[in-house]
Image (tube, rainbow, N blue to C red; front, side, top):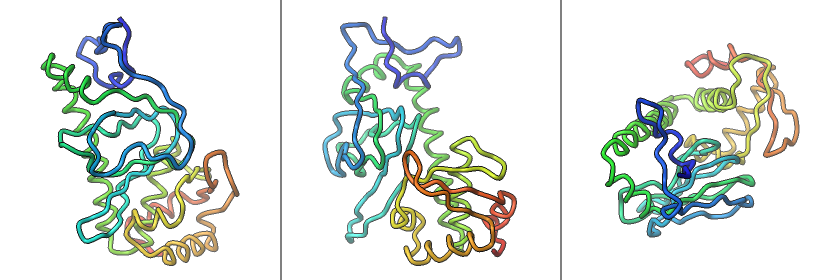
Length: 230
């Protein structure tokens, strides 16, 4: 038996991984360049992708033509999994990425054949809801500076940093981040400049997959995210 890495999170209580036989195996690993669209909003679901390395951008155009950014999934994320007839958003790579793709129909067939698999999938969906709720919580913050502080702290924690000084890699453009946080790009730029002037952030220049930023004062950034002033 050979296992599809997509199922690594879906384990039963005995730790047995869900597996495919060699005849059922239908997945492949891809090295994808930055700026490549994996699928478009409205397209028919064909593949599910597990992000091994790299950062992606998920975006959506609303009925009134507004462009919004839903998130920036990175290593360990699974995208493209839907029960609808079409993809609800567009997914593209921000950085070079390594992905594992699996056919959507084959994935659904495996779930139907095993009830336990479906239960584990619901646990995965629950984790995705936590991510969505975190985004909503950030957007609910009245002050743009609090949204930016919370966003930077989330990136730091995703990258395994919980105390300052620490360096984080930001693969997104300022415009993308501003769109994600529902603020004007000029507002984002002005607040980042103010955070640098007050010694909370420090620009470190280009990094391997984006710009490097040092968080010099994590406690103060946390206070700002909680409604405090710079």
